[in-house]
Amino acid sequence: MAFCPHCGNQVEENVKFCTNCGKAIYEKTSTGNVRRQVYQGEIRKCPSCGAEVPSFTATCPECGHEFNSGQVTSTIQDFSEKLHEYDVQIANAPTEKSGWSSWSSAGKVGWVILNIYTICIPLLIYSIKPKKYKAGSYTQQKASFIETYLFPNEREAILEALLFVKAQLTNIVNGAVDGANIFWEKVWSNKAAQLHQKAEIVMPTDAVADQTYNDITALEQQFKKKVLIRRIIIVVIVIAAVILFWALGSRGERV
Image (cartoon, rainbow, N blue to C red; front, side, top):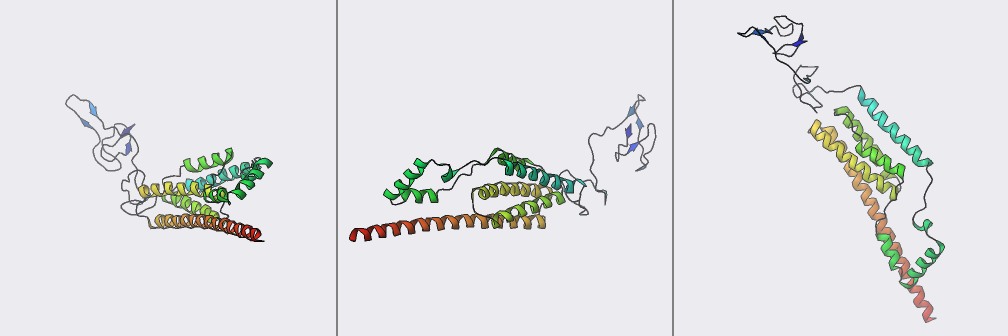
């Protein structure tokens, strides 16, 4: 197998001129040996203009042609199908009690008595403190799959992935503010940041990618605002309950 030393085109053995560029291929030295140039690796060229294109490039720097493959649609489909499999496993897994429901009867009675004698200060602290979500094994596997899944270095694949993440975060923002959604908001936000970093390398200054990521960032801020408002409401309710309890107690003493 021989290659043209000028353009890299594959040619037949012992031919004198390249059929692609027309230049001479072999030059004999004084000893009569044939000198050849060996090419290793793959030269990536734009199918539209023929310019050489660096690796990890989504568009041709010369003509702007987008490099897409038939794997893009199947990639996002495989990704979503795998997520569905995890969702089925999570739904069928036995639920573990957590929080108040997991306490013993003695623990519940002791907690109530403690708050009565301390004017609900422990309850106030508990309401303000962020709750740690206890993720099951399948939930952890799903989160790990999302964080480690690699999408192709193509503009269409990255944009579809960003839009997919945006849809997930939209559902979370429109849902309840609970431990599960707080957990998944963090997972999908990390995935969005990962995809945006790849977009900056593969297709820098891409307006669509930047706008999509800005929308995702806005959703993140919206959800964090909902979490903050919920905590403020809980604190206000607890304080109001303490004041009411104190007022009723003072009234009872006067009577």
